[in-house]
Length: 338
Figure 1 (cartoon, one colour):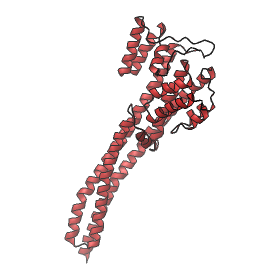
Figure 2 (cartoon, rainbow, N blue to C red):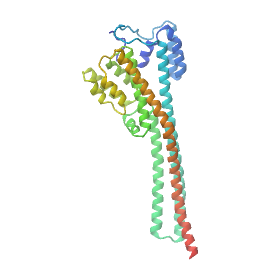
Figure 3 (cartoon, one colour):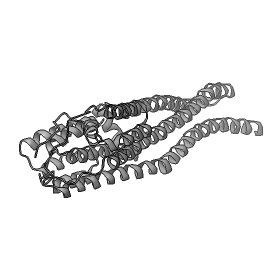
Figure 4 (cartoon, rainbow, N blue to C red):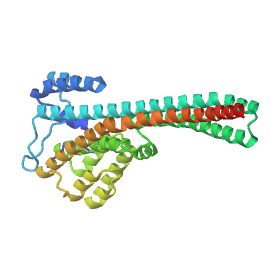
């Protein structure tokens, strides 16, 4: 089979080939409106080039006997636009949930720190004036100082976590940042599901375009923003070219990617078989569905939990402050009684 794509092809280049028929120019314009931004302008420019008679990429010339029937260009563009919109919506929801959660925590710790910071000197002075024992004054002052420092350190840590989240959602993410966020309950699995959805869709589109697994791994590595998955995909390409079994490659998949690992482990090297391409299409759909479900859980479970934790954090500072003031009032009451 003649393969029209090289190892350096990206999804956009493959998509340009799929879209290079006259009937798909209006589909490209619809895709541009759906996606928006700089990428939307690129798709709109591609439609204009096709209408002017330019060839946006090389033609596909595979043998019709060794690959699955290609879907219509308009259907491919519609599906691509829907999945990309789902990924962007999921990423936006993850960002807002996490950023707002960080803001809630920062505000809660800031309120608690301010309450304790203003209460500590007042309580210490009053205890000195009332003649509290040295051990009593020392223990209360130490407790308040400890929580003042703890609340201040927590403010810094939450602010750093928010910054790392923005880095994690960027185009190029350091591997250690990914591993840190993978440990965060609910947030880590949601982010990883989005990364795996991109990878599975890239492999499907590449195989649909006539590539083998070696080139599909390279296309997927150029499509994902995950440094961890990018390294794994490039290593997988090297191992696959060296003749290593697909099962061993699948076993080394990092993170929570059991579905994709299971698919890779059961596939043969005949990547152009219709059943294999259909399986990757279904895998991509399932990974996107998993991403959407985890994002919904993040909004309905994680966000309320963070609000409750923020309220508890602020309330605990008030309890500490009121507890200290209560001891002072109780001491005065006992003094007046006797």
